Image 1 (tube, rainbow, N blue to C red):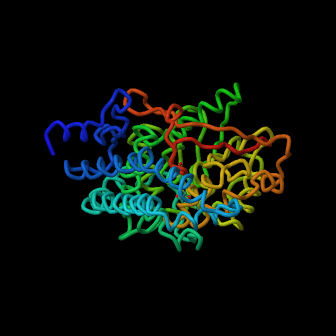
Image 2 (cartoon, rainbow, N blue to C red; image 1 turned 90 degrees about the vertical axis):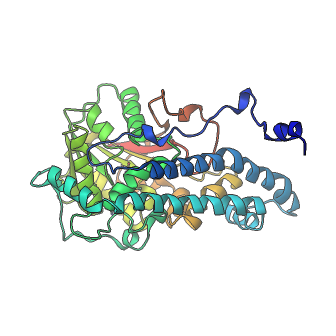
Image 3 (spheres, helix red, strand yellow; image 1 turned 135 degrees about the horizontal axis):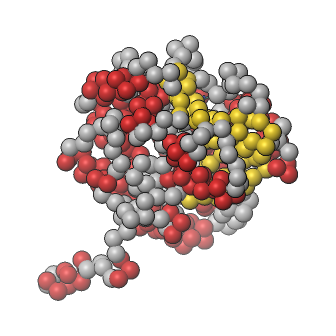
Length: 408
Ligand SMILES: C[S@@+](CC[C@H](N)C(=O)[O-])C[C@H]1O[C@@H](n2cnc3c(N)ncnc32)[C@H](O)[C@@H]1O
């Protein structure tokens, strides 16, 4: 093949083909307990973030085309359910390639983050301990039982999920989560992975002008990525972040202090029992990407507890990926369901087909006080792509969510 033909084949760049990949990992927001990363570790993260972006912008459209041109036309009857679409996709080489690569990037992302965290686990534990010891804003309770629906699963291929400790005081699970989330999301959540929380703050300011919460509770707070922007935006409020995962809570308070956000506490509890919080004493209950990891039985109970602790006029906002409404094409539903089958998210399917309005109303909220809206991540636009303008679709990871909630 001559040089000119070669360069034609290789020349894949037109004005429309400008780099639209994730930003370099070096722009990630660091803080006093963020793990150190070597050159090679950074490049591993960069490769995986770019692979994720490539899969959603370049490979996913090919899966959709394969469905429309190869799979759907072969059907004698139209598909009736997303499971039929999913099963039909399984034998298509395009879907197989995308699915295998997506799973591979999840596993490698976890390995990359674990490697970074494990090689400095004692040092990180020491730093976190120095920042949190005797601080009343960290309330750990060794009696709290991690519910089986949490402990039985390594969520999204994350070894040890949110609660495992290799030794007392270990925070390597949290350090892995913090350092690698940038990769899974292709940088779409911003420098501090807080684009969801910042979007919620904007939503509240726009829709509830004058709302001045004093007590805010974030259920399933993990290490506080999305609770911190809320605490920062409402400095007169106290934010109570609740979770079962000890390493996340420890690391969360240390991170908040390192970032100089002081009006947040981290409390260990199973949120299906919030009896330590008085009836009607909370102005705002927030959950962000939390509901899809709950069992159905616990969700009903958590919604009832939420209603009980809210003050009249208080709000609950759940930020989640959209429900599988009848108007959502079956192909999209099947692709969104991928996480349930291949990414250790066993409750993903059930959550997305539930009628959350009904559950909110059964918990006590009035139907005419329900809230439905959408938000997209608010990020540092100088370095991060804006999710609102991002036309790619990866069916599940895009930084655009539904807000489902209610006012009491
Ligand atoms: C996907 S993460 C939530 C992410 C987090 N809200 C954020 O914005 O970064 C789910 C979290 O819920 C916690 N969780 C699940 N069930 C819980 C329960 N019953 N009580 C307390 N925490 C729970 C897990 O430990 C985990 O940290």
